Length: 426
Image (cartoon, rainbow, N blue to C red; front, side, top):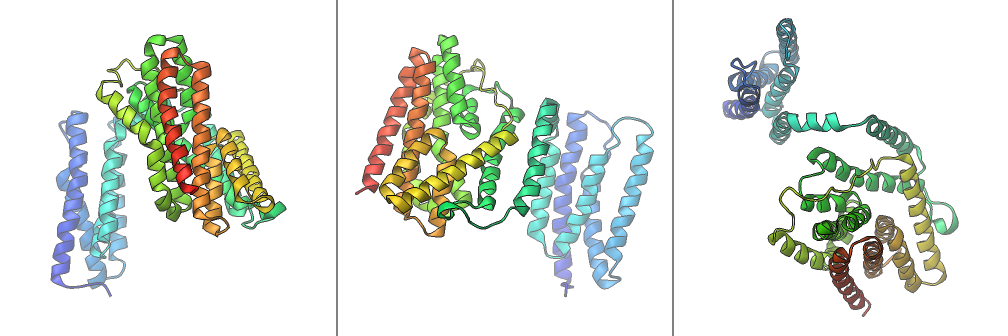
């Protein structure tokens, strides 16, 4: 039974009114200050009353009739529809967003009464954030290309259809292939890359070299290294800033490994967090020093990497195939030669892709087929190989100034990783 005490009703009315007032405050500020309107469609008072109305309808549902809340919601919907329709005849913004926010405020009042305060508060905060970032969303949608939409829809369709249907069982040599796990890893890695891509599109490509490197580490640190190295050779005066972008991206790399472990095997993340921090420490110290010295520039940062949309089916299938091959190589190595050669596989795969070997090793630890120390050492060797690959890219494509900074810091990073591997080996 729902509580009927007067104190509960008063508390729920107070919380409902507060949440409604917060939403209404954002709406009133948006109309008065962002759009400079003298007449506000619905502001602080209106949203407060809507939330109270929802709370009272929930109370009357308990005390008067079980359909009272539904009737109140329907009546409010009809009233808002008629009001917005009449307002739309004069042209301009009909206020559909405000109307939708009002309906949600009504529901928030009901949630509060039915003792779902946490849900109501989270919902109210999400609504306020969504309403407040309207200009950012508009800028983002104006920058979306037709190719972006097609790629995202293709990936969403294939993922939504394939993932529930592929069999969740192992087969093949050494029982190395699990279609469901392979495709789940494709979705995970592509999703992380797409998050970085969206951040670049939303925040723009000229917001400072520090932002470029940080987002580059999320989207593709290898792409950032290649693009910044080429740019430094074309414009040697920007070598220091390009080096900062590369090293920020490389510093993010161990943290991205930790993010993958957090999704796949949180227990392994706890055990590996120390070595991942050690691997990123030289880059963190150097980047902080450069940033404190003004290394990010002041609006004159070089053009960041022009990332392509990572949600392409060809890239997704390539990663899935690579992941499957690495899993097969790992299991075959374990069956034939034991753990020592497994570390060799980790190092070689790190030259190609760090995410695949991290995911495959962490999955095997979760199933109990690999010791935790061996997995952590394998991940460290993959990081070492990946670091060497980026240093090689900088040497082949970068300017002398960029090579000096990047190779020095990445060399120190490699030394830290080697020392940590030696520690785990004894």
